[in-house]
Image (cartoon, rainbow, N blue to C red; front, side):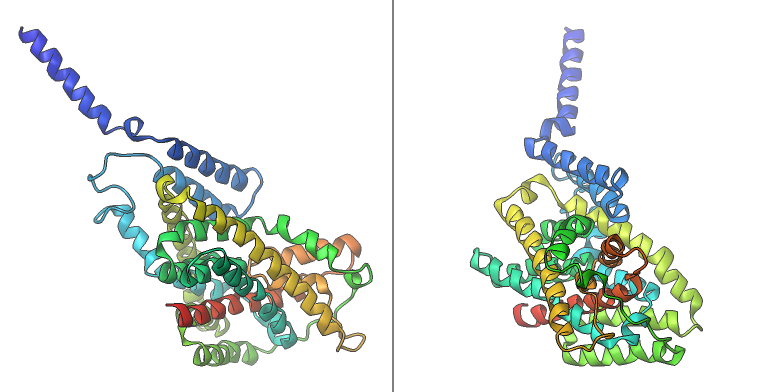
Length: 386
């Protein structure tokens, strides 16, 4: 009888242990999300699509979909858990601001300063953001949700995090993963429309070499940029302020150690935390919804419209520019702020038609302008919809 009682106790303990394993709580949705996470890791490692972002996000998805018994404070949405504290940097917009600090410290705005007309291309590509906003409202999303979805058109992950954390925190996982996924898929989405919208003659336009920009101009640019943009749209201050702060750390030459930290260790640490926590927030119960599929579809539409808007705007500009001053419309796509991905695409496509026509340095201008433009667009949407 004693042995029987001991056996019953052991079986009971094993049964209780099983209830706390992931196998007892796993759903078909969790399995599907784990497969999606593995797919992200595959694309990052094998295809080399934005590996610095997709590896942390993919692994985060795996972590977020290990099903567990609720109440033991380990999940990302459970108050007091370690993951929950790390996720606060996403929900409070801390990580995006720090990412912008690092981007500012590594960005050279010389191309933009040398040819200020390129700023207009960055502005034109914001058409994708506001078009997606209008379409999302028509499809039944609330104005706040539509604003957060629209920002995917900027192909700028940190800005997507910043705005969605304010306007649509319940959709932040789907919006941010969509933004980063399309950043990785820029080489797939943009070239077709760049070729369709340009003629063989336009693709080989040679642009004037960029003039040399003085150190004084480089120092004055972040100061003037901050004042001009944030006095007009104060809601963009957390992003634009940190971007230009990082840039003056770089250009002043007297804070080299701070600039190196911002663009090195700091941005790497924050990128890890963003990817891991956003990925972990993409749990099957909240991620696998009709809204998520709608967000991904609208994200693709917004990127395409932004690309079309940038290329067509350059063609319109060329109607008013003299020969020798014309802009190659293949850099129009670079207004989409997937730094430096979209600028590299301009270079790759341009070299296919003229192996001696290097467009990269010219494309960096609208690329930088697109980053600033998407942050300003986020500030505008936040001002009206928060």
